Amino acid sequence: MSEINDPELVAEVSALHHEYEAALVGNDVAVLERMFWQSPDSVRLGIREALYGSEEIGAFRRGRPNIDLSRTVTRLKVVTFGRDMAISTIEFDRQAFGAMRHGRQTQVWRRFAEGWRIVSAHVSFTFEDATVDQLAGLVGLPIPAAYRAGVEINLARARAIAQAVLDFPLPDTVESAPVFQP
Image (cartoon, rainbow, N blue to C red; front, side, top):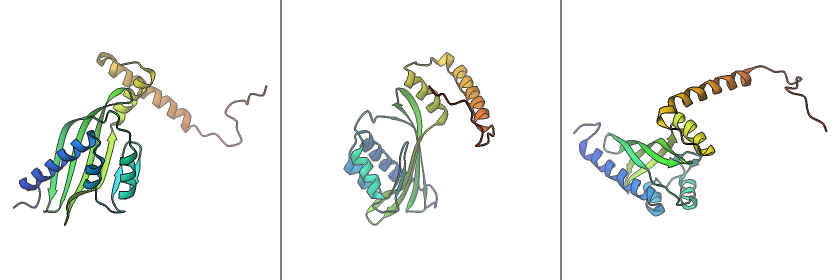
């Protein structure tokens, strides 16, 4: 038996990932809570939240609205180490903020006496997609594929110009603009 990527264990953790994914998009909070390690040391870093401990993770799950949680997993990779540790990594696409977004998720799994549990998880959207798609969604203006590269170039230019202004040293005694007084 191989110490890394034992085929039986890869299949076992892959099946757990599929169970987790079904519970996530179906908002089955009981299953989601069961799959996380019930410990103050478990961690979940999400799109907009940093949750430390199973109490915070559970409270987040119970308070999250069940609104369009569907997503499409585009890639799954499971790596096992020995008999009791695994890491699952996915890429996914999801409709969010009025636009299609590309995201990533990593979960660290550990086998305990009661079975496999997620001890740490991280979820994020890719930055480039988030910027262009989020801005397009906010103004209600879809960006056709033919124009996307040009929009990304112009946003990068605007970011560079803004950064140069923000980086310019200005003493605290200097007012950056006159204060309007009626």
